[in-house]
Length: 175
Image 1 (cartoon, rainbow, N blue to C red):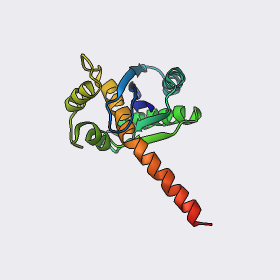
Image 2: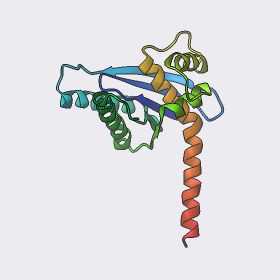
Image 3: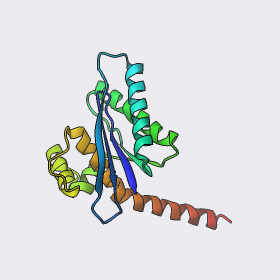
């Protein structure tokens, strides 16, 4: 399964692409950080992010997209930009006809490090180790995007299969 992971951000949006199957090490395909200029107007920044993510989906042909779920922060301005970037990432996947799954930061941390309380350094170290990289992906936004993609390969595939089975059971039971 090829997954494009997105760590949404308005100024820096991490994107990571991996291939793998549940229970096995994943393989790095690519990672990027899409930057927007804070001096630009919001519509231009969102348009740049949309075009960049659409291009990366087309280039890498993932089977699904994993996006970090926006969570409440004290800084409303930061959470608004993150939420807008998240919406663009979800849209890029949906526009391509791909399944899109969101994960909380603690779900991703637990999947990759074994602890939902892991810090950025621990996530980067584990992503480097799990993907057998010679050096850590930089900046941290790229490592976080790769962690999202790994999380989806390991958890999302199983989650999707369970949801499909439950849906079939509901439809079969409704007859």
